[in-house]
Amino acid sequence: MIILSVDSSSKVATAALMDEDKLLGEITLNDKKEHSVVLMTIIQDLLKSNNLDIDDIDGFVVSKGPGSFTGLRIGMATIKGLSFGSNKPYVSISSLDALAFTVASFDGIICPIMDALRNNVYTALYKSCNGELEKIMDYSAIDINELVDILNAKGEKVMFIGDGVPNNKEYLLENCLNCNFPSNHLNIIRASSLGELGIKILKNGDYDDSNSAPFYLKKPQAEREYEQRMKLSNATTN
Image 1 (cartoon, helix red, strand yellow):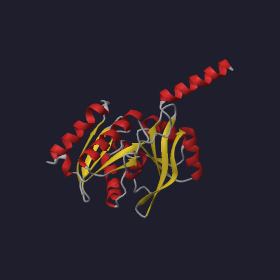
Image 2: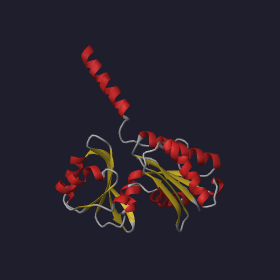
Image 3: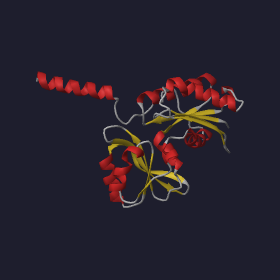
Image 4: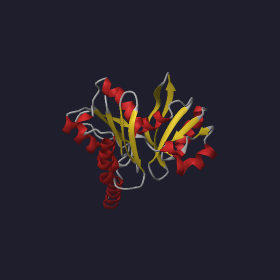
């Protein structure tokens, strides 16, 4: 089984090819170009480098979020198009799950954090149990101060990973008990991590369908601003 996996949930665009035994290739770009411009190019280059075409792919994996609203829509639309066009199955997996999987051997709480702006992060909490990740706190959009309070109350060592680390590292070192960080290159979501998680699901026959959609954890900024204006308007008229 050959899998093509894609993540575009952050500023990074990444794609990977893998089979059940090994990684065949992976391309990751972190140059802030539009995902709509680079994603298909990455996929085509990856296939060409492995002397494959889209008909050779047995299944697809894509990040479903949380993350960038535009990026997630582009990634999901791309994989849906490739899946339906080739009549091959696809699955969608949380970007937070993929980050946690990267450091699944850590013997404490694994805490992926993705930047959600305004001192907030997208997160969930995990622990490794018999080689599998167990989620001990569900996906959340949360203030970093509240997250630290939750973790300190647990009293365990914590591994932070994700693109929310650079902006919050100093604060976490000062305020979070027994915090740990991986090497910087692990803070980006790897398409290969998505692929390895996804291949297990595909082998079990658990596929997504045409109704699958990204999950964002919070509303787009434009929608939030519109609702705020409506509240102010209603308060004024009343």
